[in-house]
Image 1 (tube, rainbow, N blue to C red):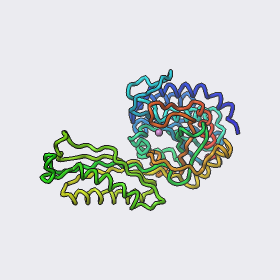
Image 2: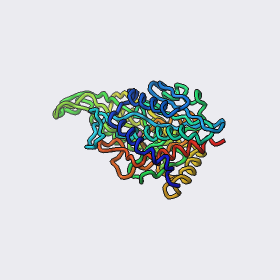
Image 3: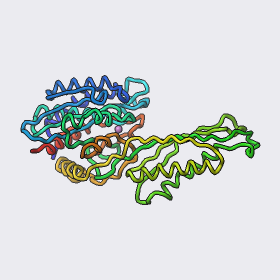
Image 4: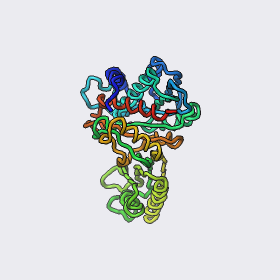
Length: 387
Ligand code: NI
């Protein structure tokens, strides 16, 4: 099935919206301009209800179909940008120093707006479509804030779907999988308290640098020796701070990093082993450690039934060759996970073509993908509200 000509006709306008968001990136919950623009557009499209301030700066648009049905489906886009300095010479490059839409949330917002405009104009569906625009996906748990604010109950949402662009995949192709599709992303800091000494007299001190190095190496045994080889866990120590001079053994060192897993049992095992390894290694050397281990977003777990339904819809819309229903999970985090904990649904990827990767300073959302994204949103709304 080709793109609906009415949706194709929205491409130019959706591109203008997308580039306007790109030029004016905002971070976390501070998406006031973006959210106001989204709400204004939803009202202009004739949405039946537009509510701002859900989960601080989230926006919800309600559209009733022409035919009655008790079915209510939620479609979600994220609105926030990243604290990155853009390195492109595009005419629509970021006008804000140090901020950039490097993850394509500008495109996600434009695609869902396009779907809202089309659905509100045609009303060619049953039941109710809820358009969800969330703040603070990039580390602020805006998705959780909206769920905690009663998003699902207030509008009676029964199923929820989320979509993210994927560089390196052909434009407009769809990829998804049942089960975990994005990882749980936890974070740690370890303070090692040793004993300072002259570098020439290590026997008089307790060297936190040597201890830190051993901890970093030993943590790799979580993946290689503790985890089932067929399950996923990645431990990355990304910062190691210690010392002030070449001839001084410092008294303390700090390690920081992240632990990523796809399943709850593996997440628990990784934390348990992490603590045992860090504490055991420190004790072996007579050092003290303080561990701060914070759990971030849970894994994004697609529900089997809804993923199957989304796969069928994508195949019927774009053809079998454009749909991969067994894509490898990604070890990045995603706070749509909280919405999938609250309601059944699926998180799907849409190809962004041959662009720079996500979170890269040369990344740009591919505007040619906008019509395909609007189309798939529209088809999901139609199929999942059918009486
Ligand atoms: Ni993103």
